[in-house]
Amino acid sequence: MKLSPIFVIAFSALVAAQRGGPPPQEPKAAAPIDLTGYWVSIVSEDWRYRMVTPTKGDYQGVPMTPDAVKIADAWNPEADTAAGNQCKSYGAGAIMRVPGRVHITWDDDRTLKLEADAGTQTRIFRFDKPAGKSEPSWQGDSIAQWETPGGRGGGGGGRGGPNTPRTGALKVVTTNLKAGYLRKNGVPYSENATVTEYFDVVHARNNDTLLVVTTVVDDPKYLRQPFIVSTQFKKQPDAKGWDPTPCSSTW
Amino acid sequence: MFIDLVGLRRGAWALAAVLAMSAPAWAQTELAGSWAARNHEDALERGGGPYAVDYAGLPLNDEGRAKALSYSADQLSMIEHQCGMWPPFYLATGPFGMKIWNETDPVSGTTIAWKIGAWEDKALQTIWMDGRPHPSKNAPHERGGFTTGEWQGTTLVAYTTHIKAGSIRRNGAPNSDEATMTTHFIRHGDLLTVLEIIEDPIYLTEPDIISKNFQPDTNAMSPVGPPCVAGYEGVGEGKVPHYLPGTNPSIDELTKFYGIPREATLGGAETMYPEFRKKIKDKFVRPEKCTQNCGAPAPPPPPAR
Image 1 (cartoon, rainbow over the protein chains, first blue to last red):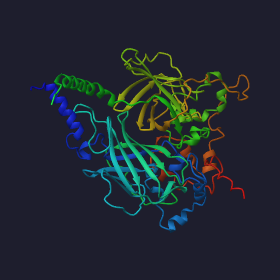
Image 2: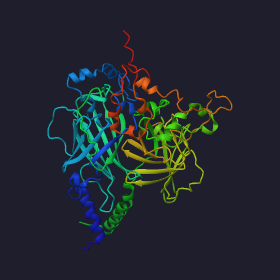
Image 3: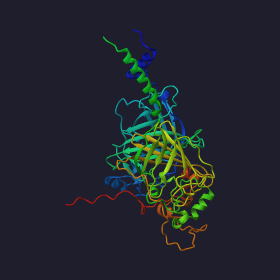
Image 4: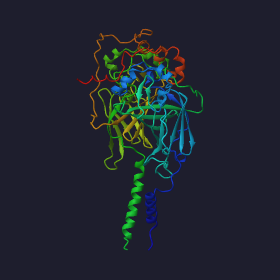
């Protein structure tokens, strides 16, 4: 029996596809976009909630539950500081909205690290599930995956073949959080909140490279519907302006 | 065991054909449908509208700021300015959702254009996908501008020119008729982020970058809207509504209500960046309690006993 070459190729491709194909690349090698480097916040939206500490009771735009309103109405920044909770507005639910710079690097082939100079926070995005349960923290536990055309998830970089331009986004899901604030004036999210983020890189006509982070905070306790915002950053060639500062409850 | 080699070969050909044909579709995303706005950011601006003098975070140059401060909302009653508040940027800066659909070639099925429906005060926008060039710079400028688009991976990137002079923010902060807008439609599952990069060599020192999020709406939206019309503002005949330099009565509203220093409310590129916080830190005075446009629902009444 003689099989045609086309049959052999197609059959092999089918079998390979069923078996998952060649071993997936490590997430670092498979990265469809380059997130590394220094990025500076562009604060063109929600200015009065981000650039200054908003006034008590100013909750415009947040779909808060009545319980959340009660908590926010009782906001006491001095008490937060005294209790060592001055980082409540720098947790994963809010940190990308805090004006500042972020520095993204690969910690290893399967782990991205995002450092924020505002509040001197560090986020770890693992492409693997955590081995065990850790204590809740401001930045929680983040699971990352690449989203690529035709195939989402994992570290394989998706389908597309060698000539397909690499394109895609990073999806990060964060849980195991300490309860924090969506805004510095005490708008709360609970310890059961889930933060889902999409990191997209955009190239502007003026040659700026932009990072767009779309954040969805789900919190049935304090939000009537998912809280959704998108935040822009501009890539910098270097660390200029990098200015780690401690968390503050009042500024 | 009987093996139908002819059938297998046919199947292999079909498989190869399907794989080859499906590749381009991986790089595109379905955008058609009705999309509900999620105005969780800039809620006041996208809802009732911004304060009359709130240019914070807007990279206005001196000329743009001067023109903005001369603006009186009474201009909405002038027929030549009746639509000035609603240029194509309003897709992100306005409150509404959007209906998107594509018009296709009846033979090949390829998309000729994407259409974004009109609202009461925003024009229909057509994103041409057929490779046609933008018209001459001397061609008429229309409310929806002229837009072409291309796919960059799964993102639709549209470029709009031939915009009418109007307002980049709904308080008279201006855009010129030389303004352009690059719009990225970024979809992640049930989440659509629209990113607008607005450039204006006349009134901006660098791009104004804004984004808005949408989610699918099971309620069908109308693709059309009535034309915007001049409002009645009680302006006497022969009067041109405006403020002379130094006379805008709203210049300190944000200072009064939110403690925000005037230099921030007047905008400029530096107000977009983190360093500006240091500049105003000692000038900002946080009021004790929000008194105006505070948002959030009132807690429901206690249950009846």
